[in-house]
Length: 98
Image (cartoon, rainbow, N blue to C red):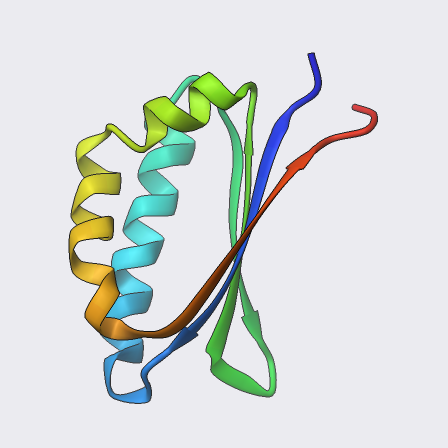
């Protein structure tokens, strides 16, 4: 089965950048270290604008991604992130080859 991939473009409100980044990095680290179905979770920062972020998440399946959304670390991130963001765009992908 091909991997389930999610990419997310985020624009963080400047006044919340440090708090949001810490929250996001905690979520990414926990996903990588605690979730068997998470194959990778990268947080990318635009070198010209630190408030522009991209997430690149790889899960072994859609079910693994759905399980990720039920974890305490994701729920904490999800509950706090909305007022900290200017925008969010999500894109779902299937890896064509390993």
